[in-house]
Image (cartoon, rainbow, N blue to C red; front, top):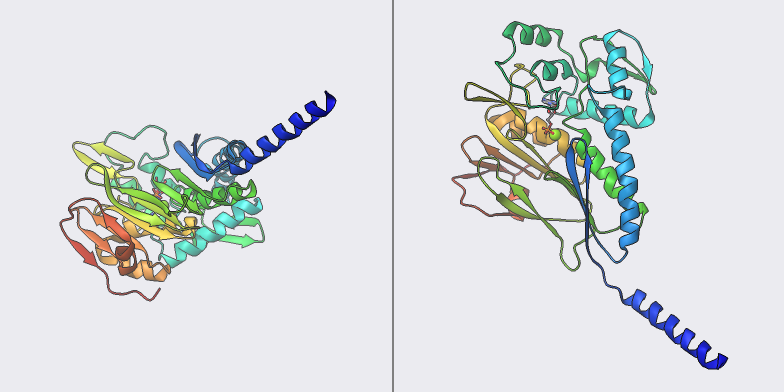
Length: 350
Ligand code: AMP
Ligand code: MG
């Protein structure tokens, strides 16, 4: 009797091992609310438990980044740093914030100041330091001019290791144009530490991917900034990120005029001629900063800035719905709608 029971036990164990081995990977998806937006995490895995564990850990990481890197709410590290800058004090920051600011400084310089996260006061003046969309007339032009005259720039921020000072008290850092892309890259890395090798982390259309979706690459859609639905789809390879800056995302509306949340640091006024800028790069932070800078650079200036930032995969949709695109981007993107005009830039070096 005991022998029969033992044989049954062995058989059952063998079956359960076999079924565990043969469990094939499938799609698993979870959504988090982070950075004031929904973060959609999709994985192609045979281990849903590990995926859930990874998502819980990501949630913690993102909540902490949101708290510490928020520009104007709470008492996080960046809020305290901005206070120190305003008062001319020095402050020692964490290695993660120092790294974020060092990269911001580089991208600001490469974009000739069009990506300028030091213009927090200007962003606040336009009403975008608020959870609700701002209303009412645009700010007093004199107030805009006075902030422009103060000329806050990332070059004003001085690093002595992680001890930071600003030589210009008008510097107020706002990482809204950069931190999301930077964090998406980190999210992919963090998922890998939990063994999740095939994933897509998507915050409102901004995303990074790892691995593949089974036997195919991940395929994503880029939203049409002026119409409905998806303007184009693209296959995204392991380690790539796709970041889009759009005028449609947040704006202030007054007397039928929309004032976008992306500001031109040269004029102090919102960007007008670009509806969206999309950048593909393995570096999510670079792609995010660049998408914002290229929106500011506009249909005439974007090629030079893309070149300076070392980007080859860029697409702009201008206010008239025309596409401005690099050859490398055109080669891989598939338009899903009728496009008025596609203007391919001259071949860029990189
Ligand atoms: P994004 O959607 O990545 O283009 O980021 C837009 C956000 O970045 C805005 O809501 C502002 O907080 C901030 N911002 C606006 N204009 C600029 C700029 N020229 N440089 C850096 N940050 C900006
Ligand atoms: Mg950006």
